[in-house]
Image 1 (tube, rainbow, N blue to C red):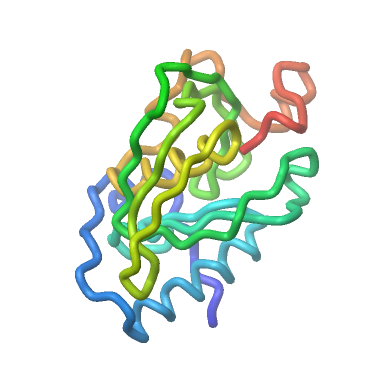
Image 2: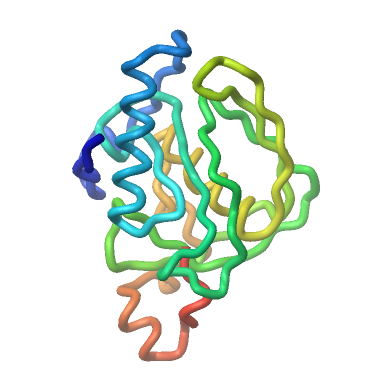
Length: 180
């Protein structure tokens, strides 16, 4: 396993639509996923998309039991989701502060669907179908956006609701529990 470099905002690969995975249950796919989990853990992330580590494939991983960056957040089951699709299950939207391993040290206020269904496949090609609400739904939507070349900064509620995490915390606009 290896810790991969995380591409940062400005890298053109982050703005491209990723390719569908067509071959499942193979060592290259398994190695990439293992490296993604190693990278996510090293960065203390709660999710990661393959394009963020230079692989333009429709793969996202997410999940944690306890995370020092989100001490007040409930855990999310560790998930590997390949070729995902998201369906909103209500019109209810929820604003929340997000960050990104590709935009380190910054946060922005983003509106997301509060309740979703996500489908896709596991690494062996078996179908996955789950529902998610709240923070779990936000993480899934954030990571899946990467597969379409969308960074959370493209979805800001307002351009003035974006800044460096430290300054947003210091000014009281952001609480430590508001971060993704």
